[in-house]
Length: 227
Ligand SMILES: Nc1ncnc2c1ncn2[C@@H]1O[C@H](COP(=O)(O)OP(=O)(O)OP(=O)(O)O)[C@@H](O)[C@H]1O
Ligand SMILES: [Mg+2]
Image (cartoon, rainbow, N blue to C red; front, side):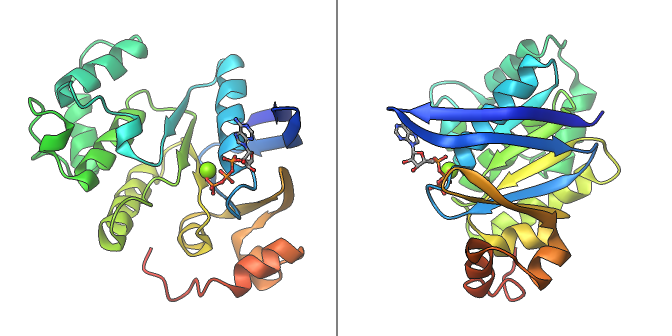
């Protein structure tokens, strides 16, 4: 199913922080959303999630830090069960085993609380949780910025493998063009609450059109980066 939202916008304290914006995703499409800090990436991500859910689409959101998704007082088993319950799904050990294998967290002890797992494992758990309902779209907002580069790259590799041949589209929000360029087929660039460029990754890198896109390309040695 192609996802399409029209006229997303946001205003805070009397200021327009997201100007009217249209976005679409083909099934399984991988899209990066890049731009300077404060350009409106997270705002667009949140508005998109709300608008698509209101249309009845299944959309999962992975925040920057696992702290935002995990309650330190609850066991990992509790979090998993709650995620299933929120989706109206019965517990399914086979589904959990498949996702745990895909994200390589089979060794994690579900009886422990989040602090019993490393940060990298916690974030993989959160990504696995987001995939329980086989969403139409997975929105990841700086999903690996709190992880060391090796763990971050490994996590993105596992996610790439899992999403391959699946219909779940991905929106990867990041200020890191190096990360996005390696992972997505299409790049959207934001500046001051507006989408200023939307192009296939290769075309974008070969000839960025706007000042912001040129500056992002110039300041990121994206071929050298590990993830
Ligand atoms: N509640 C709010 N009140 C006023 N301004 C806000 C509010 N929330 C966000 N903004 C402003 O909206 C703009 C966009 O914020 P947003 O968090 O979407 O940017 P971002 O591109 O995700 O930045 P970052 O890369 O730092 O995460 C920023 O200038 C921010 O200061
Ligand atoms: Mg943000």
